[in-house]
Image (cartoon, rainbow, N blue to C red; front, side, top):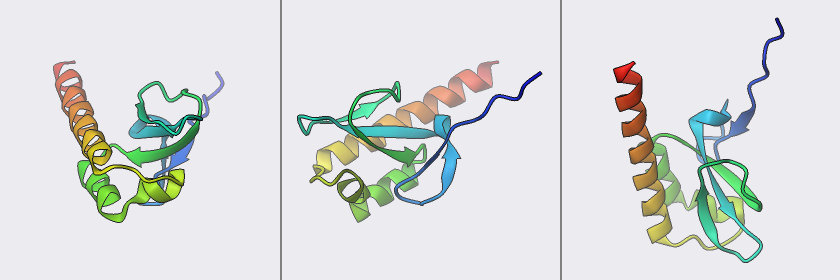
Length: 99
């Protein structure tokens, strides 16, 4: 049986490689709109952040997404990212614990 290759991506905050499923993708599309890409397939310039609240807070402090996406990211978007990561972590704990 053939082993399936695990796609790796680099977190823009920690500069470490992680499996793609352990990261959240943030996208800036052609219109310059920012969004959290849950599917990982949205068109546009993407940057990855670890699914870790502390790293997301560090991204906000360092404005890591501003540099990676070459745009001004509003503070409210960083807060939305932190809230999204908290939500994902809680969901994983609930569903992984239940099985």
